[in-house]
Amino acid sequence: MKSLTFNQLQLRVLVLLFLLFTSALIGYRYFIELPKLERSASLLAERELDTLTFSMKKIVTLVSRFGFDYAVWSTTHDFMLDLNQDYIDENLVDNTFESLEVDGFFYINDKLELVTEKGLNHKTGKALSFSFYDFKKFPHNLSMLPSARTGIGTSMTMGFLTTQNGPAIYSVNQIRRSDKGGEHRGFLILIKLIDDEFTANLSTHTMTNISFSPLSQNKNIKGLQQWDQKSILTSLKPFSKVLIEDMNKRPVAILNMEHSMGNMPNLINKQSVIFITLISFLFYMVYRLVSITIIIPVKKLANDIKVLDSKEKYTLLNENYAVRELTTVSKNVNELMSTVQKQNELLAKQVSTDQLTQVMNRYGLTVEIDKQKDQCIRLNVGFIVVMCDIDHFKKYNDSFGHMQGDKALFDVAQSLEKHCKRPSDVCARFGGEEFTLLFSEMSEDDLQKKMKEIITAMEILNIFHSKSPTAPYVTVSLGATIVRPSDVVDYALATDEIFKKADNALYQAKANGRNGFVINYFTSNK
Image (cartoon, rainbow, N blue to C red):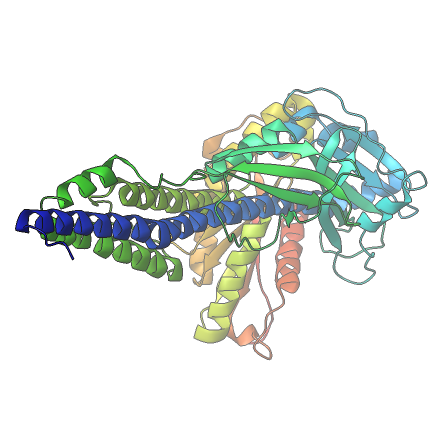
């Protein structure tokens, strides 16, 4: 065996160490670091898909809530019987489509025949024609109709369908009176088209680029993820395709999402070359440097992401890393979590806020009254429900127009909300020109004082109403019911009965000449 000089041996050892380190570095990056980074990026992509699902559900639910507000309304119930033109002129105006961001209203009677309809692109104002409600021509669309209820309550369905104007969200609500009773008189169908504006709105929620493509019935959709499925990505992809189907499991459209982190860093980059060059001279120092700047930060980032995923409330990850890829991943996680939180807050507010008056809507009211009922049952704290109706509002609309009527509704709502001074007090739009005030427990004397303040506030607000036989300005009638802990029966309170009691007081206030109030108790027991 040929002997080697020390320099030769040293050179070979250095070359061997260089090769070992290079191989170790490349192996570590390929088998450990990049898979972890890819999983972190996949988690971000999953979050983006989950945000898309969440946003879609919120939009579908919002359309359904609008349909519910119109369908469960005594005026709509009466309209299905006498088909008066005043109802159409009052409710199916162009600004209704614009404010609700829907593109079609369709009234179907109990014989599944079209009573009246209007299609209008809420963004462009262009009239739209639909034919999906022709159930003889499209019998498969019967699946969108829910089973009609005959007792107290209402039925509804929601989903997607294909129309001649493209894919759309639909909401079907059974038409009942405001108390969810009365004979079945048909269904109200609302349509919201899935178009470029729709996907642009989704893009603002997810902070990604989203586009859609309508589907033909014979297009191959095998293996595509359903829009409402939980997202689990086994590998990182630049794009994800999400399938939307109708009520008969027929394809409607595909949503294409471009992920914010669709590409992974290169295996060998500038930083890696610098590390490899330095280690040929300072092996030990580079070894320590790798341990401090790569191994520990990667473990910490992965652990922080794991802890972050287990929390309901997200906190910011550390963004101070020596390796650029780790900093990029950490920043993107923080940005995505911040976006998710903001969008969740925004969507939650939109779901429970009436778009016209900017006070709580009927859905939000049901949530708040459930909280008051729970406190009454568990903590023996009573509460008060006040029904408030604007006097002679139809005459106001007929005289000054719906635009001025909408402004009057907004001004009255804002004035009423000023009287909700405690954190638990609520002002909500119940429907049309009717509002509901929800107060925590107070004495009857204090309640009377509050009612008088509201009556006086309307006089101070002084919205001119020349057609009102009650006063020359817009007035309100108030009906209040006081719910006490002693009213709880079998650990329950009937919400419908509470509203009915308040309604009875409101009707009595109207019978007494309006511009006043009546207070009653939920039950007469002492």
